Length: 295
Image 1 (cartoon, rainbow, N blue to C red):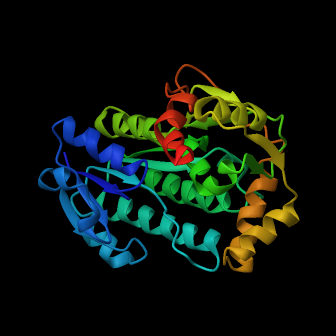
Image 2 (cartoon, rainbow, N blue to C red; image 1 turned 120 degrees about the horizontal axis):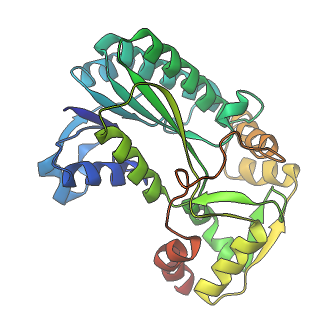
């Protein structure tokens, strides 16, 4: 079994890599700088220096793969939707060129809309490309992990949380699925290790509960001992903050479009025992946010 893992140092990919090693598999991990791997894991993986935007290099690195964990990471491209779609085409070409039997793709809630969700539209294009590749490859399967909102996104605005504000462009009383990326890694690893499935499958990864932004603020306040209130910002305010952070106009609109596209969205993938994962926001915040906000 040769399992190829992309983004092995990311929040999800690092978990996938560790679980595969613990399961007795020696994964082939693709990343720009192998020195970024956790030191203790280096002897247990085959690290291949690869830039995922270089199609020929990806094709060489995936030769002989029986399974593939694919993430389309941010590239810094001016048009992030087009860039993600191009990465998806590369993954699909690897599947058809090498006859890869199982592909697990890290997608998102909202990709089922296929358009109108900004950044997520690039993931939708990737789902379509991988669907076509699996259909064209005898005995192949693809599983799209439609993930909820990552708890780690809270780390993007620690200064505001320290000041007692949780800003969001979404309705403060609209519930969303919140998930620890490590739990996504658990599901991804299980899918990669299971060898008895084919065809197109979708598995949502919803975390343990849907939470409103007011509830999230209350959890963070309770765990950290700091007062935190949720505050809704307008799309124009979001644009201004992203522009001030140095994003290009297209990059800004991709993020704003994602926020707008998920408002009032009724997810195709319903919460079930299969989609529900265990790590609560409180448990995650105690480990990751509490030390930062206590500093």
